[in-house]
Image (cartoon, rainbow over all chains, first blue to last red):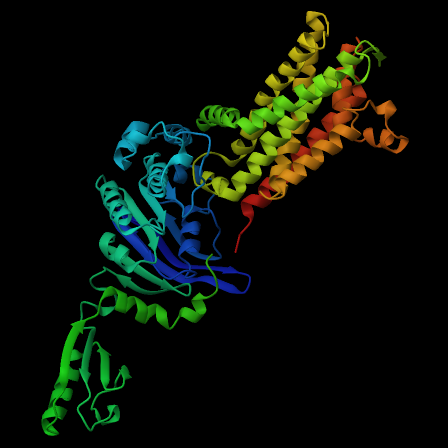
Amino acid sequence: MSATQAIVVEGLSKRYGHIEAVHDVTFEVNAGEIFALLGPNGAGKTTTIEILEGFRERDSGRISVLGYDPADRRTSRELRERLGVVLQELAVEPFLSVQQVLTRHAGYFSRPLPVNNVLEQVGLMDKAATRVKRLSGGQQRRLDLALGIIGNPELLILDEPTTGFDPSARRDAWDLIRKLTENGTTVLLTTHYMDEAEALASQVAIISGGRIVAQGTPESIGGRDRGACRIRFWLPPGTTATDLPVPVSEGAGDAVEITTDHEIEVLARLTAWALEHQVNVIGLTVERLTLEDVYLRLVGYEAGIAAGGET
Amino acid sequence: MTGLPTFLRFEVLRLLRNVRYVGITVGFPVVFYVLFLHNEHPEARIAGTTWKTYFMVSMASFGAMVASLNAGGTRLAAERASGWTRQLRVTPLPSWSYITTKIATSMIIVLPVIAVVELTGLLIGGVRLSPLTWAVLTLVLWASAFSFASLGVLVGYVASSETVYPLVTALMFLLSFFGGLFTPVPDLPVVLRHAAAFLPSYHYASLGWAVVAGRAPGAGDAGVLLAYAVVLGLAVTWRHRVDESRAFA
């Protein structure tokens, strides 16, 4: 463990009865980066971050969060001083104002940020005296973020920060999260939105059925940088898919789709076959896989396992 | 300890802002005192004092009990349901301070409730006591409200946000009626007279009844309340541990 890593997780496993929520999960989060844990509901995202927060105990594996073992009760207080957590659903406080809720929360930490600075940062300065229950949904989530950062954390954990947002509120939240990292805060977030991971994160791990199925930068994950391509065309009249010299990934009627990491080879064999048989390959397109394609390819076949339920 | 004073301050503030809570805890005992004061002759002798004085102690006890059960029970169950306790557990606030703050909040709220009922006794009921007796009565009722504060917190841990209201209401009626707070224990049916001896509410009010009758508070009453406080305190600690280690799959 070096000082440049905010989180190290090695071989993390956790079972609930006979359900294996997380299995042999390994990843590292560098200090100062935004790391996204991307996966469908019930994939094990929340369980993983709850273990990192020290809220839940693990069955096995080695974990370091800011140099601490979150399961070690002797240091849990120190860790929590340096950790900010924003949960999926936060309690709506009906009787206190925005400023009072923040002041109260600041009181839990030994070195909190000034309340007004945080209000300014999340854009709630003009709502300081408003009762929390009178805030709009978007404003309440800003307050959630404010509660997450009031303790001046080195690491901020966000559990599905924009679930339930309308598109413009999501953009605002993204800008806010990016702004927070400008002063060096490390961010670990979970999401089931591909575009969110792509827009925010410098590193992404895709988790499905409790396992990490791919990991890397959003640009390279799942082989996006080395070729993973989709080739599409229409079957030449009078031929069937079995006549083709290459295996077909998907076909509906005359439409053919081939997903491959070796597009040059596939194209060479396909075009050679077309020339030899004097047929025309109509509507030939070659495109790089999107993050969504990679994601669906990786989590799709694990969907059955993932149906274990959100934990 | 850094979080404790701020936490406590806002806990009390948010409780006082809850109009319904303040209305019930202060309003009920005051209204009941005024309503039932003339059920007997206010000057009628009972247990070494007058009915107006005796019943003021009963209603102060009732108020202290209702305030504690609601401050601890209702709030805590709602906070557990809303995920607020979950949020607190990822802050540096030590988990025991959550409970101690709840009990402290309860104790802070109970004092003005007792004072308001005493004031009603003084102004409307015409209760006359020496300054020392007023002071001792207030202190005794306030200090021994600790048992109810623990009971309130325990209810908050045991009940869900849906069951907490019926549970608090049931406890409120059980403890106040069977504890002799509305009908003096000697006037209760014989079965209930024996039941009262087991209830903290009866022993709690008995401490106050002794003070206004010029007697020393009974050691037996204090002992029973202390035993309740210890048992409830242990139960709260146990429930807190269970709540903390629970894995909600």
